[in-house]
Image 1 (cartoon, rainbow, N blue to C red):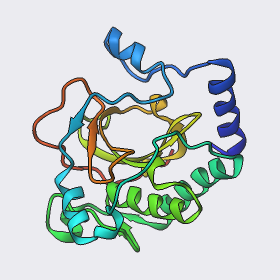
Image 2 (cartoon, rainbow, N blue to C red):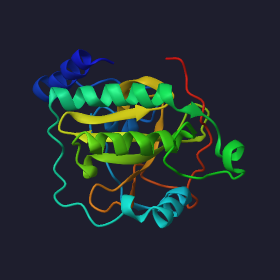
Image 3 (cartoon, rainbow, N blue to C red):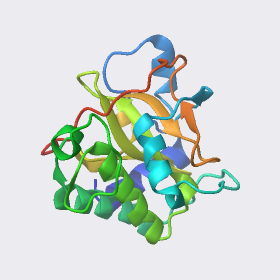
Image 4 (cartoon, rainbow, N blue to C red):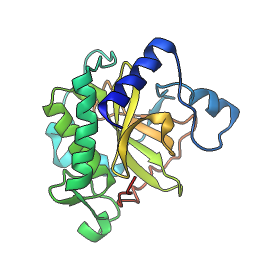
Length: 216
């Protein structure tokens, strides 16, 4: 999705109230929820253990607290950054599983040449912050993919809706135009805290299983 499309979508969502359709079969309550361009939180959630370990080893990326909570009023240039950085990271980082790289099921880190899905998300977040995006608007997010496996993406929380940056999809999309079931997300108030995106959340956090990028 190029910048003109992003801006057109954002304008239509904000000014006209036109909301994208949901992807895949859902219950009636989920269908109503997914008509909104904005995600809804359902309380606290247990952070992924890979994220906890990342914060312990790289505390500067998880320090302090975020003030406010207002959605980011992204400019056309900001929205263009979403598209450009998503495509840049997707093409410059080679997909590899944590088991292949580190011999463990889950290991979160900032990638250099290769990485897993959560590593793509961490790098995109870092680069967008360097481009002027506020930290509280760039939230690590866990979903279930089409196969029901754990997958990590980056959510850009804006006044126009919640955009998803995904290593499996080159386009930046509003969250409800993705094929995923959204499970939990980093809090926009506390960088170490997570919130549930489901009315019920499993006791054990999902392991991020996939790393392969699609050709979409």
